[in-house]
Image (cartoon, rainbow, N blue to C red):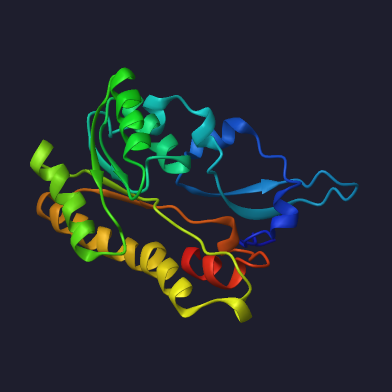
Length: 226
């Protein structure tokens, strides 16, 4: 019969047995449609559409960053957490990285030193993504240093967890300004550089709460990261 292309609910995805070789074949950013079998007594086969993000952790740095060796990448919010991990991985592939921070210059400098120890290059630039001028300055810093910008990773994000009835308007605005408007500001500035050479890559980091919200964070973080 005809194949069914659909998104499986999180409860099903937890039980899918996905071969690692298949994940490596399709890469980290490809949406792959394949037949998967739930590990339950029911042996019916279903076709689901899964983003193979977990392949990133397993694939060698060169294969994951194919085409970005020695490329110039701006990773927003890269002084810690996911942004830091992305910056280090790109740096290990020989990339030239703009390490962005909003508060901790010490942490950002440490990331830059680690990148250089791994064989990459890095500069540290402070910037609040809630401000148009700061987003533009981050892109300008890359161009001033290396003459171009090849990729942008919109990773920066904040949260102000609280229940809706207790949330203050300024809390709402702070999160929206960084998580949503900041992505627009940085992307707009980056595209102006990339369009001139008709080439570039932009990656937006989302969140699991963008699919299913959590109490206290659902209404705000979910909306800004959906």
